Length: 157
Image (cartoon, rainbow, N blue to C red; front, side):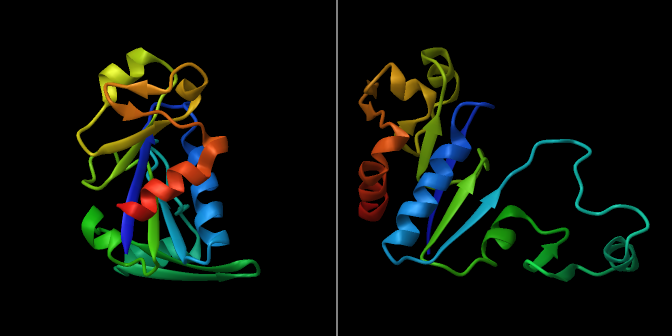
């Protein structure tokens, strides 16, 4: 499984880039999974008093959900590597996960964002900055509407 990270500052175009990549890879016949890192301190899928919350409090490390539109498994107390190992597909596209070591796409709004946040793993830049620049310190900047170029780079990794 190839893991590709897409990270950057809020409202820089990350979700647009991620969904475009997922769509393009899926149309090419690849199986694609995704994971989103959420940085809201009080965020929780568990609401006190719900049955799934009671399962978790009772000690369940995983809680499966079955609902009319799908199925999900919630994992608790897993480090990032263990969590990501649970996915089984040709590609896993990460949104966020800034610290995870993998090939990455940086989404940015400005050159200042690029200067603050570029990492060695970045092979491509996209997001709102692609309206202004085509390259930054030798790293190509590609507009999400040119997703085929980004997908080709991903396939060649």
